[in-house]
Amino acid sequence: MVAIDLGLRALVCSGLRDVRVRFRSDNQGCVQALKAGRSRNFVHNDILQRLSSFALKHGIRISIEW
Image (cartoon, rainbow, N blue to C red; front, side, top):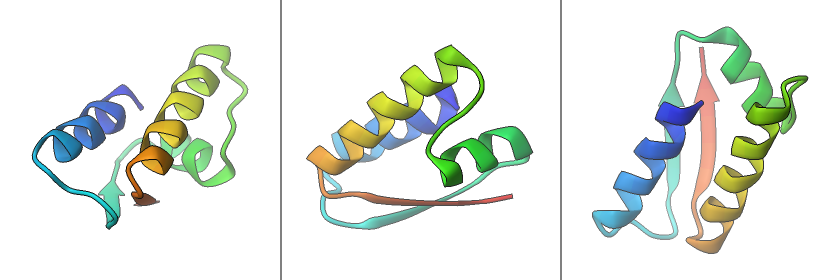
């Protein structure tokens, strides 16, 4: 989940705005948490909230697949 957060920040730093970004992950728990918008893990929920706020601020739509 942290890798997705860092990847998204790197894309924004490179100038991307108002786009759809597709991430592919081999971590099924991460994929399910991002699709659901929540996790049972408190730390993951904090990262999800930060990730969603950041993406919304920059007009980025996130999609993820396993």
